[in-house]
Amino acid sequence: QVQLVESGGGLVQAGGSLRLSCTASGSILNINTMAWYRQAPGKQRESVATITAGGNTVYADSVKGRFTISRDNAKKSAYLQMNSLKPEDTGVYYCNVDWILFRESMRPNQVYDVWGQGTQGTVSS
Image (cartoon, rainbow, N blue to C red):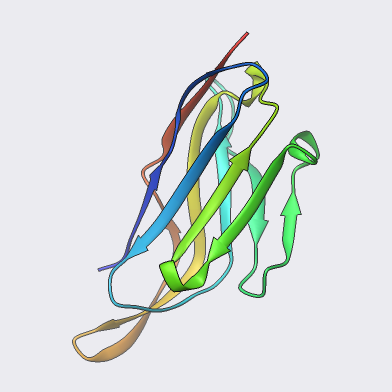
C-alpha cells in the first residue's frame, strides 16, 4: 500500500523556523503534484504550498516570501521550509499528493488524493 508520513513539526518562537518533511512509502512508480495544507484550531484546512512533478510552485499569499516548498523525487519526498514564523502559522500541517502510481501484485495501480497523518506546528508569541 501507499502511505505519506510527515515529520518535523514542533514548538518554536515567533521569528523562528521549522522544516517539515513528507515521505511516501510503498512500491512507488511515480508521484504527481505534492502539496502542504494546514488546519488551525477551529478553522478549515487551507492550502499552503504546492509543487508539481516538474517543480513549479504555488504559495498562499500569507506565506509568500517566508515558506519554501521543494521535493526530491529520488527520495519520494517533499519538504516545507518555514521561516519567520508567526503565531498565526500554528496548526496541523498535512502533506497531500493528488495521485501516486505504484506497483501492487506486480501490476501498476494508481491512488488519488493521498493524505498524511499530519504534524503539529506551534508558534509561540
